[in-house]
Amino acid sequence: MRVVIVAEHASSQFGGEAFLPLNYFRLLRDRNIEAWLVVHGRTQAELQSLLPKECDRMYFVSDTWIHKFLWRFGQFLPSRVAVMTTGLISHLYTQNIQRSIVRKLVRQHNIDVVHEPIPVSPKFPSLMYGVGAPVVIGPMNGDIEYPPAFRDRESRSAKLTISLGRQLADIWNRVMPGKLQAQTLLVANERTKQALPSGVTGTVIELVENGVDLFVWQLLAAEKIPSEAAKFVFIGRLVDWKAVELLVEAFQGVAAETDACLEIIGDGNLRQELEAQAVNLGLGERVKFFGWLSQKECAMRLEHASALVLPSLLECGGAVVLEAMAMGLPVIATKWGGPADYLDTTCGILIEPTSREALINGFTDAMLKLAHYPELRSQMGRAGQQRVRQHFDWERKIDRILEIYQHCSVSNFKTNSKFKSLITNTSI
Image 1 (cartoon, rainbow, N blue to C red):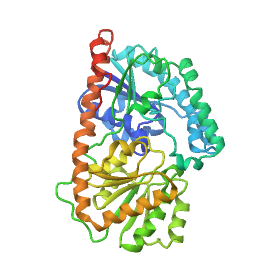
Image 2 (cartoon, rainbow, N blue to C red):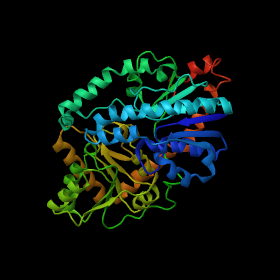
Image 3 (cartoon, one colour):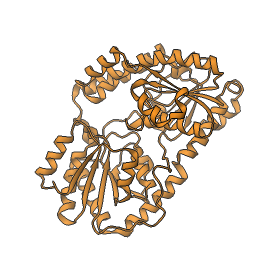
Image 4 (cartoon, rainbow, N blue to C red):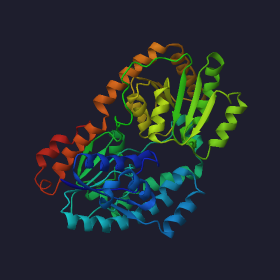
């Protein structure tokens, strides 16, 4: 099996979906699968340091003045608008260059499958067509809006821009028909499947977007010993849609009744504002900001935590939820998007986002419940570990993706009609 992984970024430092192509490439190479990686040069130094033995298998698109101009212009736009305008243009510009590299690799190495794991948006067009090998795209995960009670967090102009972009998606995907011509499209859920562009002809398979590397997020060998004071941890970017300001407000009620503390790990344009909010609420000593930490450092913080808290209002995936579960932690999260797919009542507490007050009060009550009942934390943590082992281990995910590659490869993609009918509705 010979595979090319092509993506905008592959990184352990960028966070979010950039982890996905990195994990596919790294784990395939760990199994001695012939694989190559084609990404943007922004992460070249990191990847060459992280995977020094694979340098000859990694190809990088240089950062040009066009990339830099689009990035700078995008800083003046709302984040979701930037993703669908300057971000999309930059991505397609990069992909156009990557397409030439991929075509050359296919010819030189007799590639069986080209896999494009990101962007995860089902609406974004793809230029990975006509490359000389079958193409797999995904797993995709998207088409999510703010909960109805929180739609006013987005400006009217942003809403109009996003709505127009989605309406034009079918046109984009006909002009750049990578998804329409892909041999296989992977989707994380039914919501994403319904959001695919019209005219898709390939096999559509349901496959979880995120996974957990259990070598990094290790299952604890011994039973967690509850500390006297509960410690709640948030991990993520400090941006509007993560709703961290609501978490800080919710924690005020927890701090009033317990000795619990809240650790906020991550960085973003709202950090100073959130730090000021904590001070103004009298929580300066109880809410601690750690900035950006590596995966290893995050795992170390979680090892001494009582629970993960994630108030995000626009989370398609939420890998951090799975990582906390792997560490034996219960999770308190908004019942919306990805966390609602990953958690059940045995391992987490999901808060309905019916209103601002309901979300704040729900997080307060859930944190108090876990602070007062350490045995409940241990019980939910064990259930989360079991759920991760069964459904979200990256090694199991690689097993599944190799099956998909095998049936999509050059030697099989013309004769796999039985496979297509068998797996169209399966999932992991």
